[in-house]
Image (cartoon, rainbow, N blue to C red):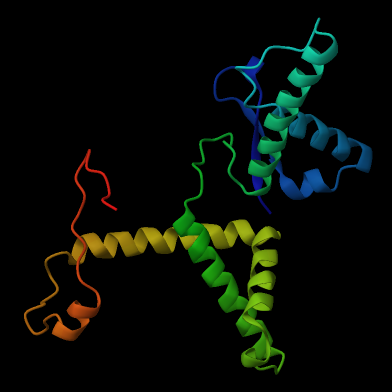
Amino acid sequence: MSMLNIPVPKAGAGQGMEIDTDDIMALPDDVLKEILLQGAKVVLNRGQSKLKSAKGMEGGKLASHQKAIMEVVAEQWEKMKNGEIRVTGGRSKVSGAAKTEALRLAKALVKDAIKKKGGKVSHYKASQITAAAKAYLEGEHGARLMKIAQANLAEQEKEKQETTGLIDLSGISPDEELIAKNPAKPKKGKGQEARA
């Protein structure tokens, strides 16, 4: 169960109707299709503010303009599939680190499921486990796991901030052989170009 606050602009700022997503999914098919059509129409047509309307155009100019618009729509569809769109309510884009953490968590769940069914994780290709984890993330529980991943990263960042300067490094030192194998690269300053 998840609640959506559907804005009702004519009722005033911040006014909306709370609707359970389960109730939406239980609507008659034709009503649900209309909701999906209207919502997808709004989101797919984002990103075209710099493009003029095709109204009044003809011939080759019309065809090339329509192609340009449809390329923007295709890009928007890819963003929708990847969860990279602006979401009402101000959710920011999910970081790559959060996606990586969510995938790590999903893989652990897949491995746990294999073990619970009496299987051995080593009998499965890593690519199969990754594919099952990605499918899980794209399913109904993916958003919840993404929130857990984001919380994990926030907790790790908090821990880094709190422990900075608290970890005693006096008992360890760099290994000379490892330094020789992997020398430190000089940092490039602004405006400096890489030398060939």
